[in-house]
Amino acid sequence: MSDYAKIHDLIKNIRIAMVTFTTQEGHLHAVPMTTQNKEFNGQVWFIASKKSELVQNLPQNNQVNVAYATSSNDYVSMHGTGELVNDPALLDELWSPAYNAFFEGGKEDPDVQLIRITAHGAQYWEGDGTIVTLFKLTKAAISGETEKLGTSNTTTL
Image 1 (cartoon, rainbow, N blue to C red):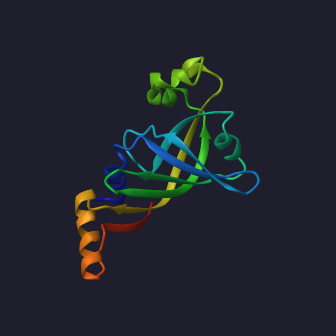
Image 2: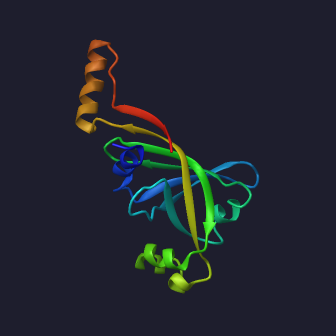
């Protein structure tokens, strides 16, 4: 399985990611964002307000991190670059009626901004699931031996 396919498999059912960026003051700041991808191909897409802190800060520092987590102990952390994109056709493809709650003018609202994150690398951890993890933790506590919990891999994209 390719790295792209593996990451797609891990994040395909996760709608919300934490996007971390650097503020103008040099501080790291994270915001929850809804991922718009249908398939991971090295890029992830978000829709945001042009007034948002993320959109305001990307032109000065486009280095970002995108993190995903599942209830079954799977985690993905991608680092890359963020870019503000103006593409009405893509916006039309990615738009969901749920966004009408945030943008009065719908997808034609002048405040709507597409953000493309191009991943340069990623690290992922796959958990064993809650029951197996609890079993391994209990076994380690009783035996005093170290247990391996899940698998991890780092990749360049």
